[in-house]
Length: 237
Image 1 (tube, one colour):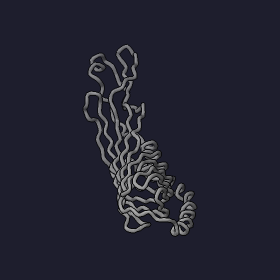
Image 2: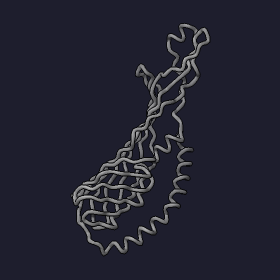
Image 3: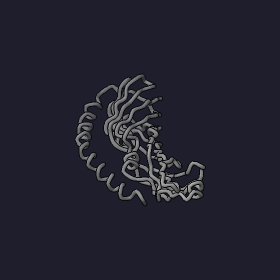
Image 4: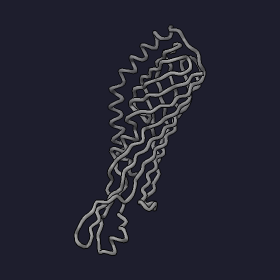
């Protein structure tokens, strides 16, 4: 696949980041031992929505390129004896922020099991240079290229501090991302269409939530498809 080399480079970078965060796990384990004696607030179900920054697929999309395809020369350029650059170029990047939804069921006061779904996308305009018979060049937009990433991850959440209005936790999800790349010209014709499946994960090493017994805001620090930095709202019942 076209992203294999980039994926390997990302994996190396993530491994280095993980080693830097290993110390956080030690601190969490130490705190969890003392937290077991704290007041415990019981809920069985929780749902959450969130957004984040610096996801795995955003890093991949930033490091990789859209598949290069040959320019479809406009009829007007051909009629005047014009020429076009051989391949499209990609400009004006726009990112759709990652959105996630998750559900967990608590089998006991520490462990919750459930799943995470996440989506993000990237769009760039497609340009080419058209040269007419007089030698004049014009840099024109010819279409749009998009990458859409949909991720599903079974997950576990460890609530090592659960109080009525405050909590701290660690979350881990492992699953797969379906990545779709599509390029269309401005007439709507599909010039390129490809779908890949890749391994993906979310490791939120430190999560903090606060609010009422039912509705809480939360922030997370970690790495993965939801982001290195994650924030959102959670409902407990």
